[in-house]
Image (cartoon, rainbow, N blue to C red; front, side):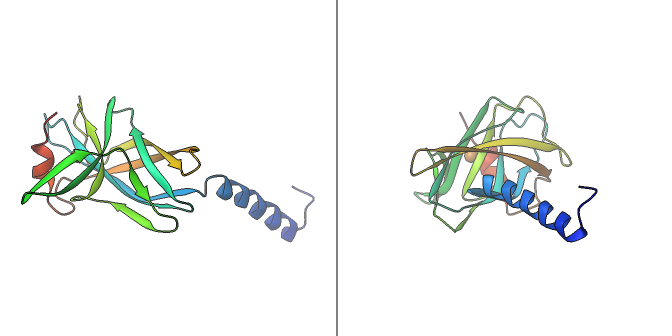
Length: 161
Ligand SMILES: [Cu+2]
């Protein structure tokens, strides 16, 4: 690009970034984080904000930190907060769906090592559109302290599998 005029260079650069953006524009993940664990704790949650350009579902997730990653929902059931595995999280077009403590979350189970504040947990998220097409997104989620958000940590601790 050395013989390009500055304006041509800018146009070329923005065209390139536009192509990159559209290739991955279907689903966007922001503010991903994982709750830190205490020693011996074998499960924790990953949280994030997801938005999709078209109607899409989050159908699964995986991570190199554990072979067991599930999509969960936490909800009141008979007056008690319980969580359960769900087949998917529906992502309506154009809306931001928040995975957060007390709601939907990505559950990391059977952890062999403590997940410490300052670590980064790679997550691979799999989405499926209404046409059945799948899209995979890699996210690097920073680990935040146990008590950095609301408090359903106790409920996570009680989680049995
Ligand atoms: Cu869970």
